Image (cartoon, one colour):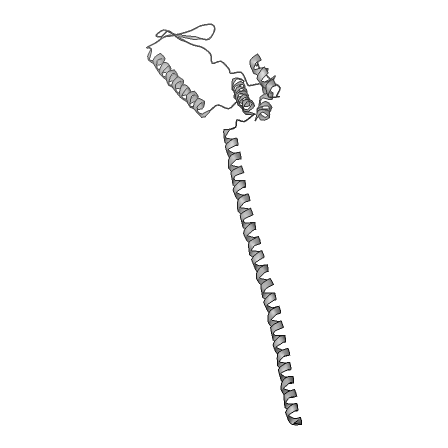
Length: 205
């Protein structure tokens, strides 16, 4: 009888231990499930956050591109507020260069040099031809008091070669009144002599 009771007690204790063990396993599985559930929720929130950030960035980029395109159109269709002053400065720079050329301060262009060389070659040829005709007696020369030479066979005169006046940087220049007002409109004082032309061109540039 006592042995049967002991067996029942041992069996009951074993069942109780198994129940505690099952309870512990169930609790661990529950906590593990909760942990995995929270982990999945965090991952879902993180993915949603990235998705929202992507949408926000794409939206901002589209708005930015639209603003840039709109600004470019405005710039392309707008007129330069200083366009009139720029045109005036360009005109005045050309005017100053013309004054330099008239004053003998601007170097001759390649076209002008070519024309001058061609003219000198023609004059040299004509002079040689004239001297040859004088030697051959085909024409007669009369030397007058003014040292000019009159050719009997022609109608023209050949006088002394005139000296070209040397360019003077301090030579006074004449500026049209209308041009003076244009200088005033761009805030630059007009030049009063040839030495100021380069500085005025620099101011207008």
